[in-house]
Length: 242
Image 1 (cartoon, rainbow, N blue to C red):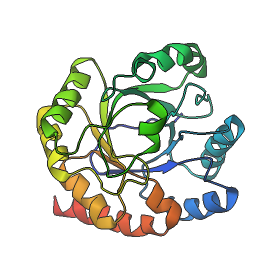
Image 2 (image 1 turned 30 degrees about the horizontal axis):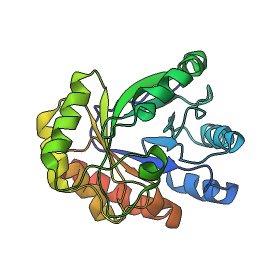
Image 3 (image 1 turned 60 degrees about the horizontal axis):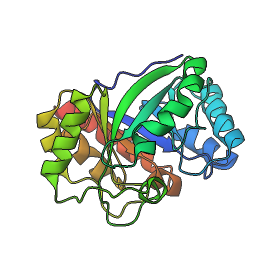
Image 4 (image 1 turned 180 degrees about the horizontal axis):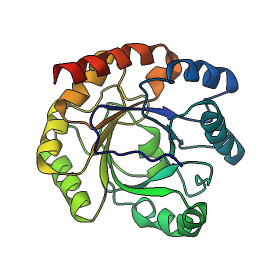
């Protein structure tokens, strides 16, 4: 099992949705991820169980990069992965996504014997209705409410979360505002993961500069896997300029 350290700065993660990742896409993806991509996240809102585990196994067999589960529901657990971001949707008030699904999945996660990273998941309005919003039946926090977002992140840290994930939603029109990342970074000491709406290398680099430990890209990579090369160049430049 390969472990990740979310406290490390400038980490690049690729989100892979097995329902969208056929073999041709995965083969294209691994061409660009051998050097510089820190880990994969595998998961989605709607998944067939066999495709979920097959995707994990393919990535594990063809790359040296850690593969962690990004669960969309309680069925997305596998001993083939290196670990799981155990997401609690702390921005919402639906008990199923705060604790309910976790109770149902707890025995399966224990049997899988993989690393568990309790993660406070904060959904922020990205300009359209996201799959997370629809499937979880929760409202995102308006992007203008930085005080609520910051307080939610702080509460997550105080509850014992090991990371905070600021999410604009898959295919979001707008990425997380940089001032939000900065304010959350100033308020908490645990790592910050940022995803949703990261479409350009500039978006990618700006999120790091604002204080993200990890930046996640999914839709932009699905549309054009070669964007990974440009983001990796920005990652190197950002590290040099620090």
